Length: 312
Image (cartoon, rainbow, N blue to C red; front, side, top):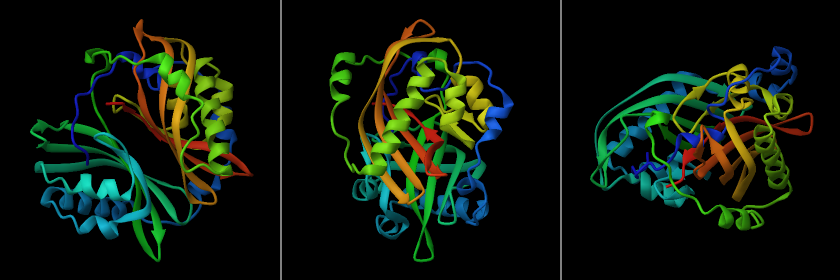
């Protein structure tokens, strides 16, 4: 529920693991066992989409009080101008300069992240404006809910507009500045954040090297992904086929300004900025706002979900 900004990006931005094609053995896709994602009880799809609809109603009616109890104190997400915490999200989601006429949520998909956390993704069709600018008609959205004193509260939210990759324009990025920023210490830093950030860099490096086996090893058994173009990859097989292709020629990748948010001892969210030195489909890569969810299985952090947006 963020204000619309000019989406400047390139089809090259598909480097975020979104549009490269390839193959990986089905055995790799099923080898990892991650009970945190699949076996623990949690809310129903109906319950979470009902909560999401209440949030859209609050956005539509500009209900500032709603967000105080609806959002978790651990909330993290992306808004019109970058990363959001609970305070900044409450201000942005109130939407005082937004006029929302109608909204429809569809194609809901629920994934367990353990007994006290759950992920829901869906397609949002919105008719409205923010700041006088028309909102994207169709987006892919993701929200994570955590159980807090018996009540489910939203702990993460982001939306990626559904766009045609071939119709988008390139957005420039200062690659040298991004490389220099790569050594900046992340916020919310602790031992678990460091471990997750190390895994995230390994995921990006495996993508850069087109290493399908490494990608399969770094990710959980059940994964899903919303790419920068709003395309939803629902399964590990779909993701592996896209991520391990050769359409991108990238010399190096950089992750900066990383922040880790631990929802539980076995579930963490990493938000960060990403850049790459190279091209995809012959075009220069643009900057990314990235979000990755990790689950801990057998003392190892595994990537299980991500949603990436064009940096604005």
